[in-house]
Image (cartoon, rainbow, N blue to C red):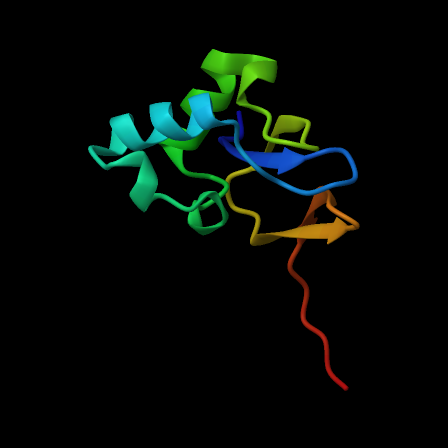
Length: 97
């Protein structure tokens, strides 16, 4: 059986963001003050972020966000690809120009 990695993405136009409640919960799990946490700096595969989104469900969504946890094979080199704020996970490939 393959191991999986969980990643949080935003599935609607508008962009990734966390609700105030989610940001406070995330900061508490990290032992930080919520005012010192900027949600765009949070790694999308951060264990505590995954926990917050799973725990709060739709309440974790920030303004104009609809968050989803995507699971991919753990050995994939990945990045978040977005168009007008709607995101998906893409596998990193080599390119040359």
